[in-house]
Amino acid sequence: MNKQDILTLYQYNQWANAKILNATANITQDQFLASASFPHGGLRDTLVHTLHGELIYRRHWEGLPLPGRLQPEEFPTFESLLSRWVAEETRLIAFVEELTDEKLYNYLEYLSSKGPYQIMLWQVMAHVVNHGTQHRSEAAAMLTDFGHSPGDVDMIYFLSESEAQ
Image (cartoon, rainbow, N blue to C red):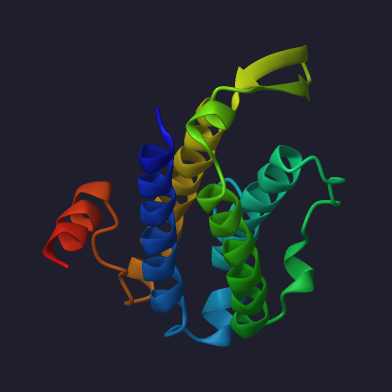
């Protein structure tokens, strides 16, 4: 894994998130707040969980203090969530753009419920994109049920669009 590979993954992540967020902009407030049987609840709750994942990992990678868990209630409207999302995405992309190939192979220490462990930065960065993929698929299912499918969010479509530009 090298910087260009990680940058491509995070550009895909940004593109796929934008498709979900653009579709979310078309739903009603009631749909945004509605509960659902997905692991993290309805659309707002799932999106907040996804955003929190990106936020917490980026701060860990930068050696910054970790914030408390983002709460869905902090985002009473889609616009409030979108504003926070855009701000975080800007910070995340800036972090990725500053990486070097060497830094991607640095080990990070984590403490999990099973104890401490080490993992290379590139591995956990790939995990964050994969984590987002899972929750984007849940959000896409909810959006489709609301009549606002985000369309295809597979990486192959991103790559195809990127090559065409």
